[in-house]
Image (tube, rainbow, N blue to C red; front, top):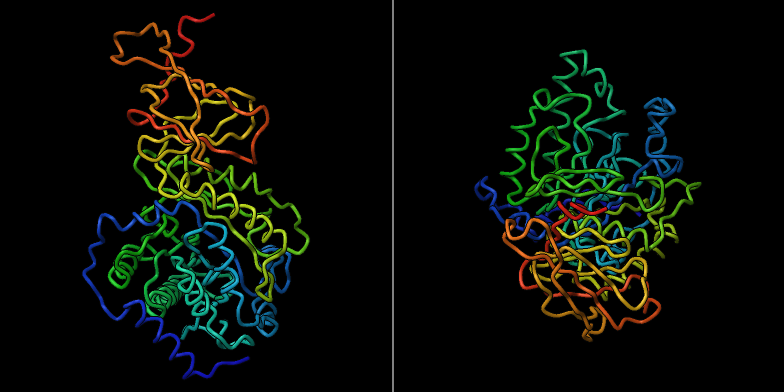
Length: 438
């Protein structure tokens, strides 16, 4: 099914007007522009494009040295039906995810958006539609924030690597990339996240990254930008590992739901729902966000194992979303069988390995006031006592050991959670735990 140019422009205009894109407020970004993002904690990443036709890896073109003219033939085969992005958005919402990030252009140079810069794009190839417009519309329809991934690296463009050694090539290629960024920031209304994936093959100065970022913030006030575009920007990005940034620095980790970023037909190394939930909890404990990637097929359908994982995660989030959304950096970590998140003075105990009728935690700098099962609201009995510490009274505060008692012999469900309200922010002091012990 093909859309005419007039229909395409009407859709883009409607998107822009609906999101207030025609207004260009001052370039100063409010201090609270990250609030919604840090509250969200959980998002969906989508790697999708013509590489799904080959279905071996998103790095096919690079690893197999596929010539651009040969790779371009994939554009004639990539004809996803309408409706895929809406299904992704519904799945994300069901899973408890609050935002989405789509690969508007990956390293292979194929643009899912309408662009004047190249004919290697969805609107000018067999697809005949603006897939970014469909995605943006779908995300907003489900109440999700909109993020766009963009790769500066471009294997398809003839100057994409030549720009490293050829000044004339660089003078052509940098404006080419800038124009594509301007298009995705201008044609779809409000964009909540711009997710760079690397500043290769140039550095920030060669990319004129400061001026580009200034323009982006003027055009998209309040946009959140990651640190992979050559500048520090708003948040740090780790990949396939949970790596908290320094205190006070917003951060996010992105991980695949199996072993691949894009759709790989032979990859069956699916993570379990328990593993996904565990990574999300650990990210939230460190004050970070968890961006979980899916790789839809060429027809935009999501592989069934991905759907099953996200549905199970969603069932857990429907009971325990309050322990993730709005959570803050947590200074409690010591336990062999409990993971933690925090909101204010409330500590959430995510019991990953059920210990039996008693859960014991130690070295707290404040006392527990109350405890309850998060799923039912029923109270949990506890007792606490001061610990001996050789530093007292020099440290100026007591330490407490807490036992949550009267628990069932076996876990009441997968990853049950207890909420414990403390007199002040729950903190474990572990510095001298073994001092003087034999």
